[in-house]
Length: 451
Image 1 (spheres, rainbow, N blue to C red):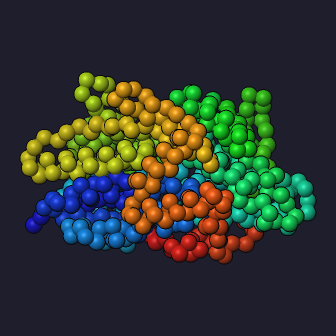
Image 2: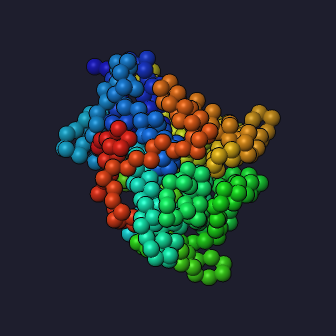
Image 3: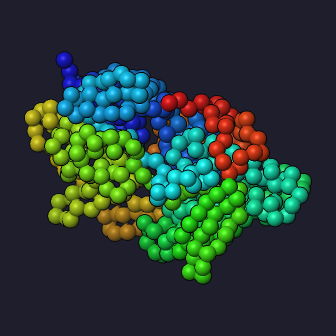
């Protein structure tokens, strides 16, 4: 019998690991709780009606239709038995493995305040994107019917919590929708009067970037009409808005559309893995792994992607943490696959080494910041050249020629017309703008998420 490789999750890490084993004499089972691979860096474009879901997602079975050593299963893993080398699915079925790669990803973290989740959705899945898009568009619809000026102002105040790349991208696009896409479509309100706020608890936005680029991002946000509040700590979120504390004291922000982009926590599968193997978790719930991405005492189990608290081990340098970005997950996937092949050949495994290709963030139309590491040193730029670089980099890394072509066509149309063609929502009334929505199936995009 050929070695059985089980990969949990088909994000960037799991996808890359399976592809790296395409010529290996092994049998691979790839398990995911959805039927699609999602290009998460562009998920905010679905949430802001710039792209439809199929433009950034691809059916997993279609991706591996020609890789004969891969079997894909739509299922959810609930338990891992390292001694028996099995996993248990949600329906009670079990799968055997000889080598296990866990790439279950991450979810939202509300820092212990999960009661905020119904009022401030995060952005990790297509369902999240559909819900955010619904709330944004329905806020304008409700404002059109509202006679009370105070309630109308609350409906037209959009708050994004978290000044990382996702928060910056969402806030900038919300401002573009209000100022360029919707004007002329309403009769009783002027969408340009909408107020977009970006709330960040730290001293600046994009804290992973150099201070100069962070300041350029803040300036570009301001030029789009986004109000940036730094040093603002969120103390409460409810159906009417949120409470923050700044250097000047507490402040109440009335808003019926709050989006959470402030925290990330590892998948709950990390806790299940810790209970089964005794491995260590960090404060975010990520699994602490060995230099070769395996678990201590369990060489047959490797953890990669956002679920792994991994370090880069470059020769002659101190180990440094690997950021939770797609290039890191891809590189870990390739490393995990290569180490499995080394074990099968009886060779020693190699430590993971992360190659940092830099950070990108788009602010809005013609606005972005880029921080690249090159052999000659750091290359940093912003504005229109950075926006072009960001655009072509994301198109290049999309999965499949069709997706690249469609995204490029949609962006070209939006650039010249300011139109956002994916503004269709299904089954969404005006109720529950700050609560859970009964319509979460995404059929308006021609894509019904599974799992």
